[in-house]
Amino acid sequence: MNKKLDPQLLEFAKSMRHSATDVENFMWQLLRAKRFMNLKFRRQHVIQPYIVDFYCHEIGLVIELDGSQHGTNDAIEYDAERTKFLEALGLTVVRYWNYDVLGRTDVVLGDLWQRCCELKNTSP
Image 1 (cartoon, rainbow, N blue to C red):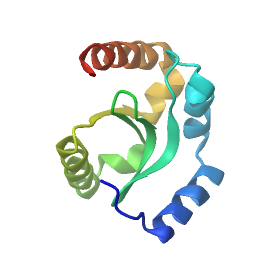
Image 2: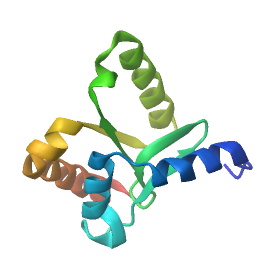
Image 3: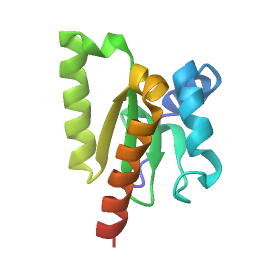
Image 4: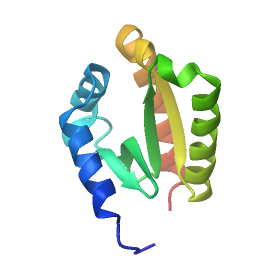
């Protein structure tokens, strides 16, 4: 899995970090610098051919934050394909709606805590 990453994709990921949504910035403040369960998360991380919102290599976890645009039929189909691809790499993908991250943060973090515990217990 040591293929050279697409420089354009890397540049786009970098630009996405600088133009993050309010929800992404909020979540990043909770996850960054090993603040959550002492796990190292990366944001706007390239897993070719995709860029994922947040990624924890240690436990193989991808976190995607979804706004209302993810409710359309095309987006649902695209997200399903993307999830299938990432899961085929052995990764676990969790998705949270933006409004839940902002309005029900405790529920989202509780679910995330549970997922991370399960993955920590199963990772080699």
